[in-house]
Image 1 (tube, rainbow, N blue to C red):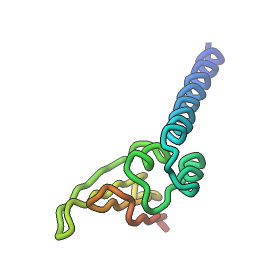
Image 2 (image 1 turned 120 degrees about the horizontal axis):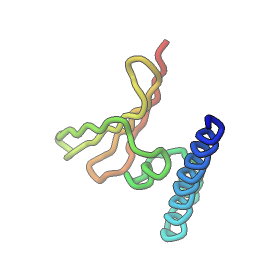
Image 3 (image 1 turned 90 degrees about the vertical axis):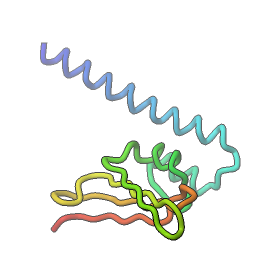
Length: 109
């Protein structure tokens, strides 16, 4: 019984990861104007400055937290991946146009 559950769990994980990979390839194929740097980043699940929110979602998945701030330049959004208090985390800062302007990675000591 445990073996069957383990096999079922592995099959589900593989199918989910396969879907995400297909979505990344489909996005790249339907956006021929993408730079090579952004294409490579999406496929390797990395991020680079200038990516839009959809591209970041394809690369990293959904963030753990989203915060929105209004400032002189417009609305800024900050996405957090991981837990900055007790573990490692990454914080991504999007400008008013929805482009990744800055990101930082933290690791607790």
